[in-house]
Length: 442
Image 1 (cartoon, rainbow, N blue to C red):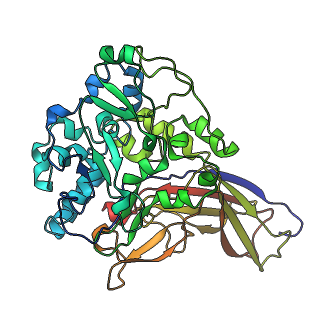
Image 2: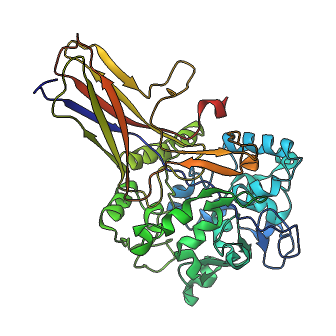
Image 3: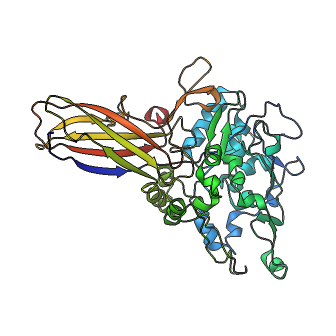
């Protein structure tokens, strides 16, 4: 390379998916946990009726804007997600149904509440209330959490207490003059303003061995976001541009507005977009707006920096480093089940004649990533030490290279420069992401 300079092109595409979570109780099914291994329960420990819940399309009558924001989100598609459905089927078969309620608790909570979906075999007869996944009344009927009963005191595994009915829990109280017109009572719930609310389903542990399968809440709790009082809702209940503003300033923003035409003006009304990084499933299910929003969010969530030698002789060795910084996610990159996520560097080096002299991280025709690629994820193994993507088999992590909030990780490469290379050399670095390895999808 001599004194010739490098040209850089940096492209960032990545994702952080907050998958649904579980905390191990080390308990069998009891009156307190009738849906074990899910820690889900109703306020009286008894099944609710379908009629106890308000269908999402009825909520639309007064909350049209919020309904349209929720529609197509991964909350709305939690049940319809085809990858989850297939993994649920495999897990149910391999464990003879032991994991069924574990999976249902977060992806189809109405199924547990009403008894309409208690096993995989019930999927064939699931009604619209169940198929709507995490719909309006699921979140706004949560009266309390049950974190006090979890082994670590942290919410997880759908550790919620559901109380469906005319009262709707949220960040505001009803205006008595409007309560009759609204058709329901709004009850203030401090929990709905906290990250612990989201942690009920976004922390996940294997119920047999306490192995953390997803620790998005724990990652947030250890971050500067938590120290600054930035909660999940501050980033995931605003637009992608506003989320980046929050991440950059580490200050929440207020969005004055109306929850409905009948509501008083509030100092801040949360959007119900719930955008993370799952553009693949969103697009597959026809939620194109959500897929585009996810891509917009991902385009700003990390930065790349090339660290290059000042000079290197032909026929010699040069070291290239690529520093990846998590600048805008309030948890690790990737997050959720880090064992499944693939966040990796793809590097190309070309000489002045356009000849490729080095590559790393390419995807082959079968969909597999170069085995020597730098990947920022985790590897889980079963009790025998065999790598596995099946949550019910995971026993421990061999490693975890996910990148914590506001921190960096660096990939390093040794480049043998051909004697025939024509300078200057061009280095192109991409940060790629996909939610699942090809072998898992196969």
